[in-house]
Image (cartoon, rainbow, N blue to C red; front, side):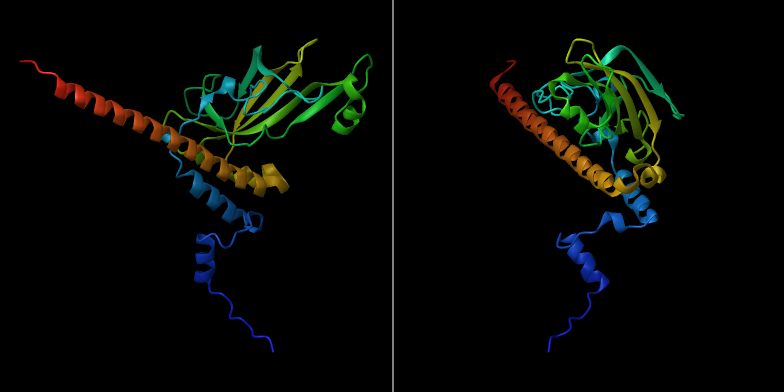
Length: 253
């Protein structure tokens, strides 16, 4: 007769989670639990301590071989170069603090890719258009990406002492192909504050995946910051040693 195991206590379950023996399914948490968990994590993020922020004008741009793109063009449907248009339209709505958001505002992406990409494809020497990648691929080399849009979950470095939970932004953008070139330019960027209360509604069925990626990305940011600070610390220690040796070797008498 098979033995019946005693059910685990709450303390045992929490211990297994802490030891990494058990995982919590983020998607099964209630809305309140999701909000509380994300707010708890983000409210501990001290933005002034982190490295890796860049000007908004550099957030979405990339070229072949960059960490965003990762390699050469594989198909005429791919985006090889993405720059800002010289007359890019920047809209920042709903922000009550100052100074205002500009292309020099320091931000970082919390998306592992460019978020929600959409695209319109065209066929050379015809008026055919499609938003379906498979259909465009069937046209072969005569097809190309004509224009598109995207969305990135962004973190802003504020000028005050607010934490990460108060500085999440949804950055939406539109881009278009430069005629006769394998180059695209962003023509419009629209930024909106992103309160945590809107997280589940905004991402719908993808909210659990996005939330987990957000937490992992923050972990990567802290790792890169730690590595940079460690390198700077080593460099400073070497300078300390050099100056101590120099001061011992010199005399003013």
